[in-house]
Length: 440
Image (cartoon, rainbow, N blue to C red; front, side, top):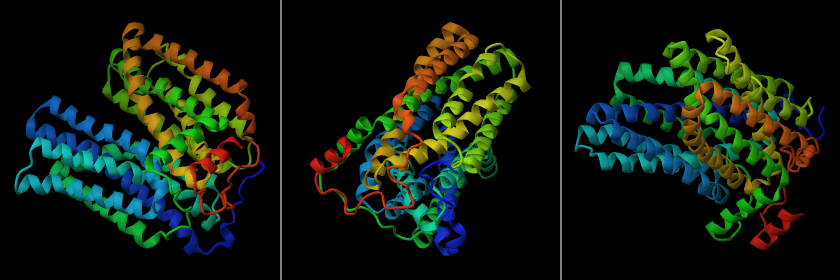
């Protein structure tokens, strides 16, 4: 077994102490599905009521931009408040803003500007709530005896499963109930999620706030990421990989399905293959985490993201293409829960919200940048050339990771294992003390 791995001691832990982990998984599933409903139902509502594609695009942008901002800065808020309280408040605010759309529409009327305000407020509070749920994981792992690896693998399976079923189910609900009624139903899912966490997830011990200003806390989080060689390496690699794969799945594969396979059904099948691969990858991590060396596992995962792009460039047909995309999904599903676990094991808990928020915000920013740059390249190189170029760049990332010295520390004893307190509480009272920690 890898050194420093937390053993699964669930047999000795009462069910009441394990229950909060399962509650967090269920409520996260409900919240993710609720967000998927909002992402589809609100633009559809705008399109039905205005008939304007441009206004629909503006609405979608208003729900994306604040999420990036709130994710970046919201991590500091997570570290300054109760994780459970912030998660509950986030869900309840989402419920109010979503329910207000049909309620105002049917009573006093709802203008486009009012809709944008509601969507902005809901989006700005959703991101810290999501980060807060992730920040609960180390404490819940200690309480339940369930290793971090297994909890994060279950979250990986949850996200992969949601990507497979949430959008089709949301489309069926909108078609059956209409976007207005779906938004009311959606508000109910957020209320359910918030209340279940409030009553079934206990308040966890957490580090005292730093006592510094909000922006100082943000800067401390940035400093920790910048000065920690392993986290810095993982973050840079994740940003580059996100930037590369955003146009692959957002532009190149749809273009391939349109021009070569000439079928939107083929596109859906390939996306389904990627989702199934990701689900399988997270399941594999759940089964073998703790019994493997992390560095080779990470490198194999990145290789699975790289090599399959080469045969995809030669238009191998629908079913072989689907199998190839599934292998890419397998690599993604294997590595994502591992990265989450590594962040939790290498970050003190009083900084976890900030570090997680920064990593997630960076990934969000990398996606549109990749889409803009990649879309231009795909237009110039065709989908085949873009697949080969992406494969070459991914292999370059792979080689850089092979020679990176920081990755050799992956199999060292975790700095902050979930089975023991990450550091004495309260947290360091001053910025200078936190900076000393960063350089140690």
